[in-house]
Image 1 (tube, rainbow, N blue to C red):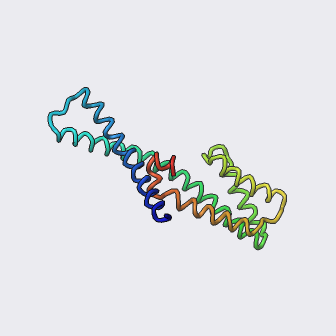
Image 2 (cartoon, rainbow, N blue to C red):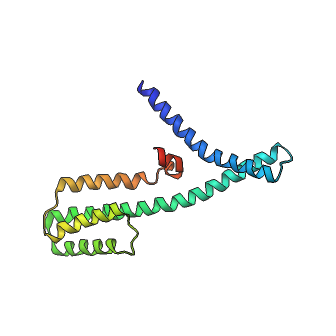
Image 3 (cartoon, rainbow, N blue to C red):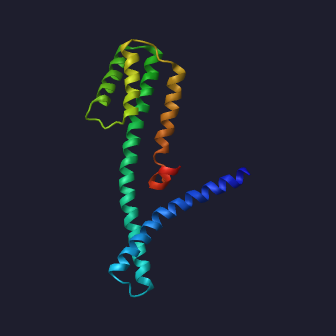
Length: 167
């Protein structure tokens, strides 16, 4: 039963990808065939290929930028938690100041961090402002979480709109 579910899930993901890419190409081909009739079967195949390629180029470039934005956010936050881990072990004031400066730059309105990322920085800042101690287990969990997020954002399925929605 478990193997059947895995196969079904994989086939569904492949179906979604093909639906997105080939579906887009076929719809555009049908639309252009209404205005400019194909002379032979090769014309239809050529149009499908052109629209498929065009779609892939546009979507890849847009999603690449979105993925890079998230990857940059996760990398910065991952580095921040590693700084916090170092600070937590020896409480040196210069490390605290460095962390605080980094947080201030990340919370600056010029930075395009999303709300969840800004909340993470605000949590760290709150502990630093109160000169409290960070929970070491929580820091390690956050490091693991953001290492995973950093790696996940560049997986190839992230270049499909439908897979982003349904996966």
